[in-house]
Image (cartoon, rainbow, N blue to C red):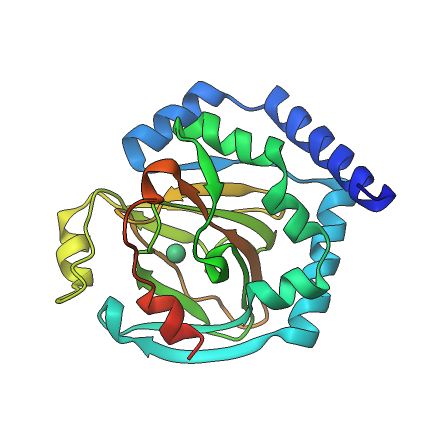
Length: 247
Ligand SMILES: [Fe+2]
C-alpha cells in the first residue's frame, strides 16, 4: 500500500472504531431485522468527512451527468439528479474506491446484517455518487437489483427541506407490473433524515424506497455502494434500472 492508501486505511479504522464506541449495535441489528434498514450516525467525521466531501464535489463538477427521466421499470417514478458513474469514480477518485474495498467498513455492515459480503459481480453497481441540487430533484420510488444498498451521506438538506429517505419494507418488485401504490398501501412506511457523515444500510430488494424531493437552495449528495451477499453470487440478476439510467 502507498503512504496515502495507508493513511486512508488508518483514518477509516479510527472513524469506524470511534463510531462503534457510541453505537448501539444490537439496536441496529434489531432495526435491520424488523424494519429492513439501519442508520449509523456519525460514521465518518472530521478530516475523512471533509476529504469525502471534497472528492465528491470535484467528481460531480468534472464527471457528473444530469438525469431527468421517468423509470418505466418502477412504474414511471422520477429520477431527477446528477450521477457520477463507478468507472469515473474509480479512475479519478481515491477515497471512495478505498472505502468500498476496506475490510473494516464492510465488516461493520456484515455485523449489522448477519451476512457475508463480497464485491458486486455487476461492476457499475459497486458505487455511484447521486446528487440532488435543484428544487424538486428526487430519486423516486424504486427497488434495487441486489439485496442491500449502503449509503454514505456527504451533504444533506436542513430538516424540513426534503431529501429524506422513505421506506416501505417487506414489499416486492413485480417487474412485469410494478405498482408503487400496491406497496405503499401494504404499509407500514418509515422515514428518516441524515446528517453529513451518517450512513445507512437498506434491504433494497424488498424495501421500496425513495428520496423525497428537495427544496430550492439545498442539496443532497450521497455515495451509494452495493456489496453482494454470498447467496447472490449464483443467482441470475438483471440490471434494467441501471441500464436505463445510463442509457
Ligand atoms: Fe435505491
